[in-house]
Length: 162
Figure 1 (cartoon, helix red, strand yellow):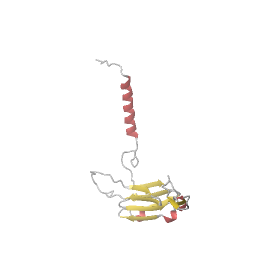
Figure 2: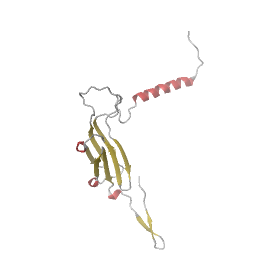
Figure 3: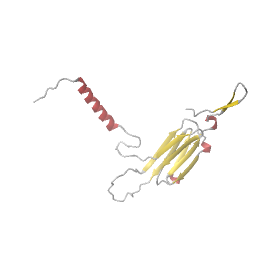
Figure 4: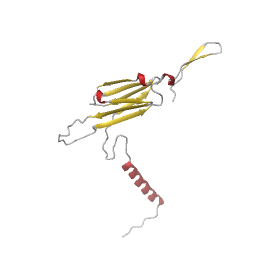
């Protein structure tokens, strides 16, 4: 027996919205995740800007410094490497959790201001790759001395320009 319901135009719209939301959630690919739902290898990073330059830290546990490829082209920093497998491929294991995905990774950051590539510093310690990338001198904020009407010098400091 069919049940009659009063016509509600919003019921159909809500049903359509729910279907679209589900489709979007199922097909949305987050950064660091593959289409198969497994996390792809990736080096986590923090980056910040100061008036003089940029500091970037990458977490690359288990990677040897000589196995990292760090390059700068114009304003783009690229770090490549291979995250090692902690379990041999010949070992038979039953995973309880696997969040560290071994394999090749590549991360790039584009900086808004020109980098002085000749002055970049790069260190590696305890699985952390740290870079200091100074901003080219001509791109840094300048401090300008301003004289008042009485001839007394005043100092005006510029802030970080974006």
